[in-house]
Picture (cartoon, rainbow, N blue to C red):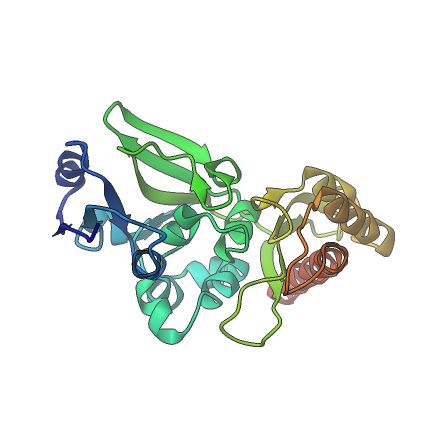
Length: 290
């Protein structure tokens, strides 16, 4: 079946009305995955609902306590027309890796999340930064942590009549920074063999007081690895603490073997990426204080 309708609502209420009539619909936050899926026959919606014309879904709002990124806000706008990169350089690193310049102009963190690829770059970075999903449905709103939003490969927690409105990130505390790293077979335009997102908080004496560690492309979904965070909290981020985080990340990984890498290779690499991401985040904190 070919797409029968393309609708561009201009408000959340209009979008809800459109999706509520039961027709097989797909949201279009950027289209860089959806349109490819339709062309390949993997997606078959009767109706495509474009979200780019709803102001709330493309807004980027920053206040004293939080950062709110509309689900359809383009990666380009986040990277070039907001203060998000200075607050979350690791998230910016992840968004900058989603395809070419042309893709960046259309794709969104919300769309990347909803597509729910195990290897999606933005998801570990969002998890590391404690992002929450604001979800709107016919019964009202609910919030869900990003690590709980993806429930399987290419499967998310949205009901058919629900919509991801925005991602809400707590504004980083003093002495906090993040980092994201991935390994790909090619240097550009490729899918991660393994990825790691880290956020750490370090006090003036060099003690790590808080941490979140997430890994991607090494399990059916991106994972929050609480044991890896516990390994570094309370430490001076010495080698023993880093080794503990690496071991925890590798223990949490359950990768597959495919043409891009064996399970053993992916497990090893994700530990290396966690170690390097922690070092990068720590260096950013040190630089900000100098």
